[in-house]
Structures are given as C-alpha cells and as structure tokens.
Length: 300
Figure 1 (cartoon, rainbow, N blue to C red):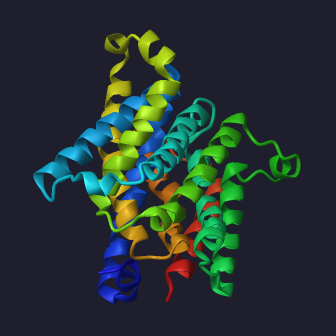
Figure 2: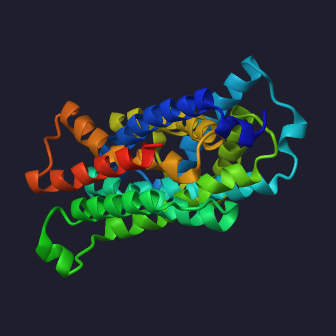
C-alpha cells in the first residue's frame, strides 16, 4: 500500500491519530524529566547515548520481527540528514531545559506545527486550508501566552529566556524533520527507517560530543540522569520515533504535528504527578488555546 493509499483510508488515518495521541503523552514526559537531569550532564553526550540506546531497542524489535536488510539502507545520506536533525532537536532541548521551565519549553514545542506546515508546503506542496491557518494561529498565540507566562509586560518587552531561544532552534529542526520523513522514505518500513535514522543520529552526535562523552564520569551521575536516559532512550526516542513515522505515512504533516498542542497539558499532568507543583493560573489560558487549536485541526 502506497503512502497515498494509507492517507486515503479512514481506518489507517484513525491509526495515525491514535499513534500521535500516544506520541504527545510520551514526549511530554521528556520535559520534566529532562529539566531534572539537564544540570548534571552535557546535553550532546546525553543525546548521543540516548539515540544509541534507542537504536538498539528499535533494531532489536526489527530483528525479532520483519528483520533488517541491506536494501533498506540504500542512499544512506537520507539517514544522515534525518538523524542529524533528530539529534540536533534533542540536544538543543536538553540545553534549553538547563534554564527554561518544562511547561514554557513545551509551549515552544507547540510552534512545531506551524513550522512543519511551512516545510510541508515547501517540500511536499501540502496546501494549508483557511481552517488550518486559523488553528495554527490560535495555537501559536497560546504558545506565546505560555512562553511569556501570561505576563503582558514580558510580552511587550519581549523578554524571551535564553533556554526558550535555544530550544526554538531545535524545534525548527523538528519541523523540518517531519515532512522530510515522508519525502525521503522509499518504501522502507517505519521500524527500519527509524532504526537507520537513530543510528545515524547517534553516530553524528558521538563524533561531535566525543570529548564530553569521554570526560563524563558516567558511574557517578545521580539516579535521575539514568532514569531520564532510560525513559527518553526507550520511550521518547525509540517508541515515539516509530509512532511519528507511522503517523507521517497516514496523515498530512500539519495534522501529525497538531498533536504537539497537547504537550503543555500533558506536561502539567506530569509535573503534578512528579510533585513539582502546578504552573501559575495565568498560564492556563494559553494552554486552553493550544487545545482549541488541536480540536480545529483535527476536524475533517
């Protein structure tokens, strides 16, 4: 079945929506956990190990199921490009979380659908409807509301934190990654394509961050770093990588990334479960706007 056939089937589209619902909940856990681990380890070193762990998990799943074949990895430049974008996103995320709060960082993540829609038009000529433009605008307004913590003074003065600025660059990489998956895939399964992407990303980051990797005393790191590494390596990299590519074959790029609008809501729940409290009430209005944007985007 071709990608066009998958997008034309109502049953396959529903599977894509369920995949992205799970994606948004799993990704949200990365923000509070990443914020707790970020001060203790170099972001690039952590991301390289994370992607290598994720590649091992996905590769193991592939070998236990359909297997991996050399023909699936033709044109390896595709995996290097996608892996570089994937690795850059996660490294910049951890760097941003050193100084930015998880909820405001997750709000920056909700700008990805707007970026993804733009790149989707450039690469795939996916047309943005009026309703989609309205939803992305509402979502962006909600994101800006949360990023500036519901403070009009901070917005007017444009006091954007350094962590949010760093993470925004990572979100640009993520927004480009999503339509590129559909553009560069040549019939490979989601599992095989994800494995190639993760392995390439881990290799590139390992080269880039080799001094930090060698200088890190891994055995003396606090438990939160290992908990975060296992979570982001197994769930927020391996599992979400497969979910994202699975959904990208079944839904337009903007609808795939529409689910990122749920991330601030999920992060608030994660923060509460981890005993880290709730955000200021003023920020909840922006979170509400992101949910409205999601509902508008998902309406057929």
